[in-house]
Image (tube, rainbow, N blue to C red):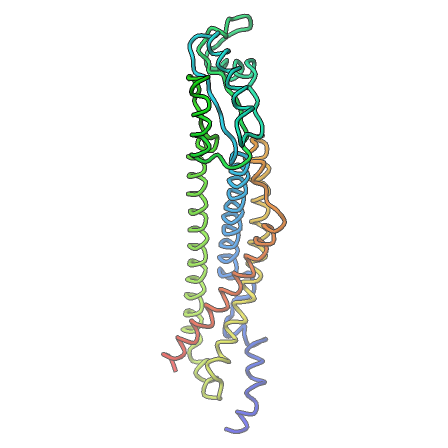
Length: 309
């Protein structure tokens, strides 16, 4: 028995090397485990990239609109509308806390409504009750108090003026983006759970198939930790290979989706591009996947060995 115990390290190294193929006989990338991990890593990379891009787009849009205010002069009489618009411009330029004031040109307003009204060149668009728009940029955020101050200043000179924060127009968009970010986070959690479940089932299946071999090795003096290390190392290798394949697939998919969205020409989409720190996060996903597989395999094998031996 002492001689067997003395040769135990060499036997365990054999199990970790050539003998490991007898304990977990599937060759690298021939069994389902590496491919399952590759699929999970690829989906996680795409979900994480989407969440990061949405966060950048929402943050950039929020920053651009934080101090933005729109003043509409709503009047059916064209002459009165133009008079109140000029008066509102003078009042806003003198108002405290206002950084920039600019009236939206009438030709731009006409171009905005032309697709819906079907107007042609030469039509009298000025007779239509199109509100006059004034773009206002505040030095600070467009808080309710700041909006009330502008309404009070305009009430006497331009009673037809309606003051609104630009961010309020995109509030439903921001809520939708937030919901999509939570959905992406939930998907990432589900992918991690599915990966851990697949590793758990694979480890239990390998333990069941090679139960007799494990019992013999254990009788030779191997501890539960030494046996678990064999499974942990084998599955970590599978996870590393699958993680690399999944990372490449996820990055290619992300770049393809980014190119498709950039073709839309939308400013908000352009602001959702990934920074180098985001790419570092994506690269760290397979590493986190390998760690998850190693911990899951180790805990699963140790728990099963306590019941088995």
